[in-house]
Image 1: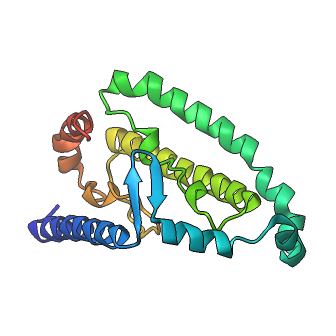
Image 2: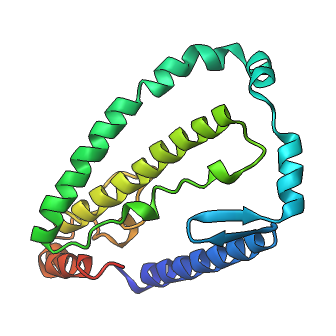
Length: 195
């Protein structure tokens, strides 16, 4: 990787950190506090949320019919997601210690906090929990697979691809055989130090 690209990646990391801090600062002005895994709103906000909650029967009558019709297809994905979750987690538990790769923490990806929103009824909270699980799981799986890719083949593609994981930008250039031989072990050792 040339110095200019390394410099841009460093700037991107600094900007991402700055963005995280700005978002956290904005959240702290949104009248809630995070206490462990619990989110607590100020009393006035909680009261306003309760007034905006749609009761179940009104929600059912005003809900779009296509949402109800497609529900079985959406929730039919729960079983495959659970199976993938179990298999990839087992893979990580077995293989990562052997490879010396730091394990991915589930709790960094699977976050269930929308249930604390008082303006959602129990069906909306159920939907949110499903989406939190599915999207969090995909992020968790992606990081496990990204670390695996970095261990075995940290090489960029010749063709431009969309939706690369954050580790991809540091990978070796396509066709750079000298760098692959020289740096593969460096990539592997770094994976044991991931925080």
